[in-house]
Image 1 (cartoon, rainbow, N blue to C red):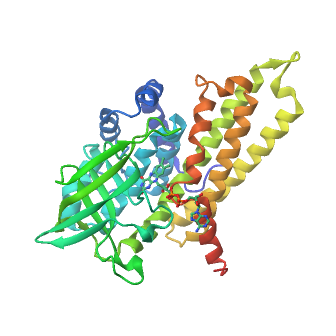
Image 2 (image 1 turned 60 degrees about the horizontal axis):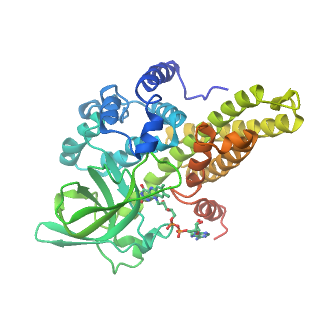
Image 3 (image 1 turned 180 degrees about the horizontal axis):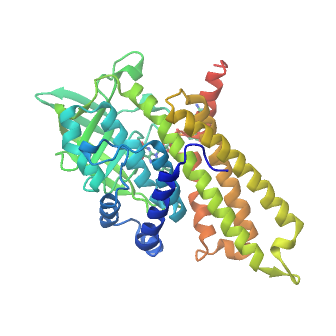
Length: 382
Ligand SMILES: Cc1cc2nc3c(=O)[nH]c(=O)nc-3n(C[C@H](O)[C@H](O)[C@H](O)COP(=O)(O)OP(=O)(O)OC[C@H]3O[C@@H](n4cnc5c(N)ncnc54)[C@H](O)[C@@H]3O)c2cc1C
């Protein structure tokens, strides 16, 4: 079933992006996984071909593409590998903050470079002592003499090694009550005095995605780099996190579809007891059940995407889609790896990488327990 928001122009984009990725990504992806990063030249090629933030206004280098284009781009990148998640994060998660809350000058200064790949962006919420409980972050920004003096530490930051521009969540009023009213967003540029990168983190999966710690020691951030208004950061996050969670769901379903394709192909080839693995009823039932769940997931996700595109309040649906699709991707990864037998545990088979990459989707962008708490709240249970 084709999603209702997918029109001929989206299919055209999909075909051209596939061609681009066949040439520029698939042949190199294993190498990027080994090296632990994707080259900046790949970002620039994406930019040159119009795949970075196509939704931006023309004056900033975009072509005002609707969210259907973002869906297609995220799906096709996911098919290459979940390690490309940093591109979707830049396109559909971080740059939208600059666009939604930036001043005219901020937008003019940064957005055009976000579409060319000259600037790679990141968002830094999580700290060593605060992840799910965002309001308890300790990074502070004190306004002094034309600058904010930023102190604190962030961790697990996607694009953390390469980012040129980072939206940093901090407290401009640590004494605010309730505490979330003291939270603001600050844009930190890579050459900011007092800002340095910490360790590049050694993850069990997403090897081509650079994830790192960020350290701010009396970092001098010009006051013009405040994003939006002081004290509004938490509300901005709550608004933008919906699209972030949708992006994670889109990736999860695309990964499920890819794993099912890989596994169907494998079990039709591999033989045991004089038959194909596909001919065993267990294989058929397992794959039939997973295919059903993936199609149910896609249908719900597509409905939620459509509602999001129509500007509806989808907080509950996005939370549902995020936890359900990312639980599903873990289940699909486990079953599909199992159906590959011992080969599924070997790195030379793509399913092994998919198995490593899947679980984190249930943790980042708000863990699945946090999603269920949001749903429970919407149901009037807390
Ligand atoms: C690869 C990767 C990339 C990431 N990228 C980014 C990024 O770009 N920017 C960024 O800011 N962060 C990023 N994160 C951080 C991510 O968002 C956090 O890891 C996540 O929000 C969970 O926070 P935590 O790790 O501190 O876990 P904790 O908050 O300590 O949670 C630990 C466990 O307790 C559960 N738990 C917590 N609170 C509750 C509750 N109220 N009820 C029930 N269970 C609960 C959680 O679900 C989890 O299972 C990334 C993380 C990873 C692993």
